Length: 218
Length: 251
Ligand SMILES: Nc1ncnc2c1ncn2[C@@H]1O[C@H](COP(=O)(O)OP(=O)(O)O)[C@@H](O)[C@H]1O
Ligand SMILES: [Mg+2]
Image (cartoon, rainbow over all chains, first blue to last red; front, top):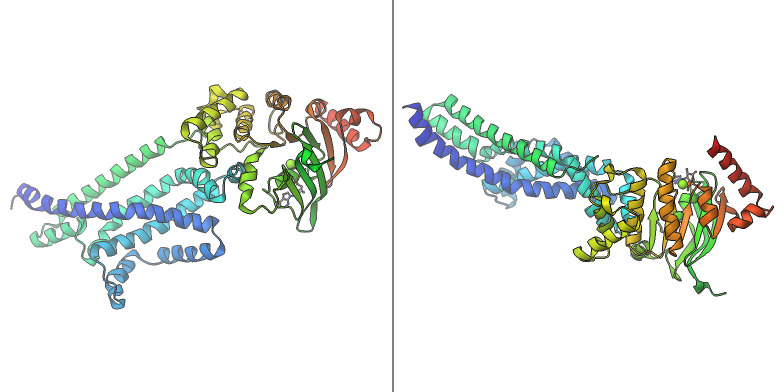
């Protein structure tokens, strides 16, 4: 078969369907990964021992557990206790766990780097501890965490391919199915690599714009 | 003389860090419109005293009353009292991510729940009061120390406090910038603001204070009007301290 015909009539349509799934996985996981990351970081930094200790355990567990294993537990393991998740949902939950744990580390570092006087001044104006965190500390910390969280988002783009290991046919998976069927591995994987490179590049550019938009003179 | 004449009453404040006693029973009363200046060697507990008044530091013993309401042991109502007791810090502590005007309005919006237009108007008005309205849209990093301190004074003023605590407001500034901040503070005193000021600026203390309190080792050891401190032979320790400062400043 002509390479051009293969590309346009078989590979690209299949990859397009896969790409949609990849984008859905990322778009669903990332916002929750960010919110949970903020929650974990704030809880660990400002919470009582009863809040910070379990969160510390959570982060340690996620960092220590291979993501693939986590996905296997969610998809193949949970049914034995009666919880059945679709491949998509199991993947998203696994990604949220992973993304939030690493995001929380970047945010926590940023929270600790905000100067002590900021909290003192906020409280001296009559802000509660929570208001001080919400309106004064977090906005500064999140700005500083943008580069780290961007890295984490890029990892998310790439490890979203692990969803295929629990049968969610995303970009990599769609390509692999085509490549195996037509025995055209090099063509297929080069195209897939270009798509990932494109996604990562767009992310990097967008993150730079975000950083500029929120930049504060120092 | 009824206690109700006092806007602020500070009664027998004690504070220790470990077995180091930093405040050993400090008491004083403040009338509306008065300026009290605290002087004394560093490490004597002056900052700790101011922070005990708005409970940023919790005293071990003693009570504070604002308009006869107890500030100490007030639970979450402390956030109400802190609106009424402004504070200005040596290092300004402006919010780094907010422009000058937003520094002033953020507590109006989030604490006083004012609407956006009213908060902005009030914030600009306070900036005007300290001569900083032209700098409203600048970030703290773009301001000189004196400008930053004036913005922080505007931020405190915006809450319409009953009293403002100044903790060495000019100690981080060089002499030229010190002057512009002291000028703002003198104006406030003239306009009837009630102020407690920790400072090493003797000129300011002697010209503006209704009472100067000399602290040493966690206690107020001598106190009196500027005239008394200068003329009454009893105030030996204060005079000694001021004298040392004069020598030091002239070097
Ligand atoms: N949070 C703290 N923990 C331990 N010691 C403190 C703390 N804050 C102040 N101190 C000590 O209390 C003493 C008085 O400090 P401070 O009130 O800052 O004095 P001043 O403002 O008169 O220079 C100092 O010896 C200081 O080291
Ligand atoms: Mg001090």
